[in-house]
Image 1: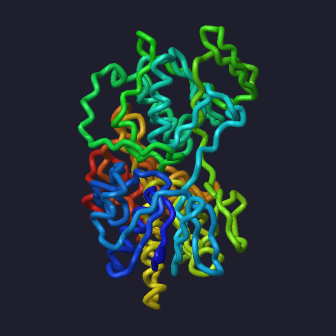
Image 2: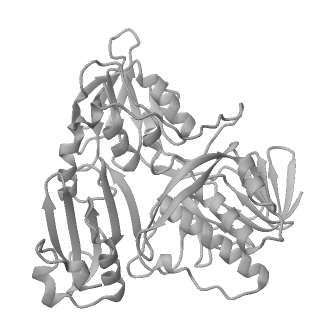
Image 3: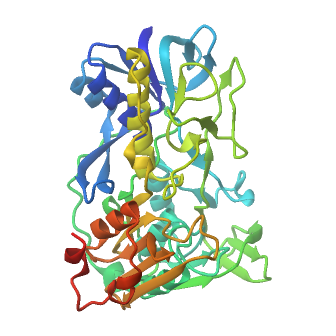
Length: 462
């Protein structure tokens, strides 16, 4: 097969890259290689501010992409080899695709705890198949342990019903990937909300069945938990026990016991449960051969420059598999998130199209400021700029306002200028905060009034 552009990966980065290429180059042949027959597509894209977007991620049959774009062909298979000198890839053992430009968007795989090897009682969660297997195993469980403190761990804890949970985290507060101890405390009351006993509305979303024999699917979307009922075997409302500053040192299995899994923690604590969920982050999915050496980061990610180019000619990368190896803007930094995977995929397509047309490409404005929106424990969460004081050392001050079970607002200021913000709940402050971070207006004279609830501050700075 021959194609101008070959994109490897059926996740958000790969699919958005292919779709953007189809927009820029409607006459050119594009091949998208997906290991799964299901791909991840962005729907309901909504701009909250100039740079902040919210969207849903839906599963779709790969045939939908081919029918939507005449110049996109989808090939099912796994990337085995890249020959950068002769410019072709080998998919599975026997499919050869010649390319002019290649973009690698194969994402990342779950980084499981060391004790997970060959242990059927320890599950990693990554794609739809793994979450459905987890739900099936959970039906017979009265007590489980969840290891990890990021987005997926927080969502699982909030969503699970009828199962007691031991939450094992190495930090001193919950959801530390995104928020500070104050916001972690704000979320605490949500762990026992009556949400867990309410009736679920039926899932009316169209479902697709995976073709047999597929090994791996794309990662879960940001709203994956909305479409599943996650219930255990207990008759009572779930109890959540948090083990702070804890890590697992040993796991023993005794199938004859009521709770077959016995966990030992580094602080000497012991937990008996039915199942362990490992949600401790991801690592790059680099499991293919390449004829020349790619420049990789210390975490085994593909290093890319400000045009998403790798160290090899005409090979690009986007999403979780790559590392942004350029001088970052003051208020932006890379993070393994759906929002950045989408941005990188679209931008990589723009850069490849520009290279083909020999056009000058300016770096996308989305890399000027970090923006992310998600939902944690039922609350809308918006993160802007240096939201946890990243890059600032200890030289900054914090303004914050909290109304229990309603909102949590934290502003990061340095030298009187806004550098970052955490907005939890329906605050309607995101546009104002983004603009103040970008224009670096001196707020020294307004400091006392910025979070005064009696002043409509967003209209003042409109």
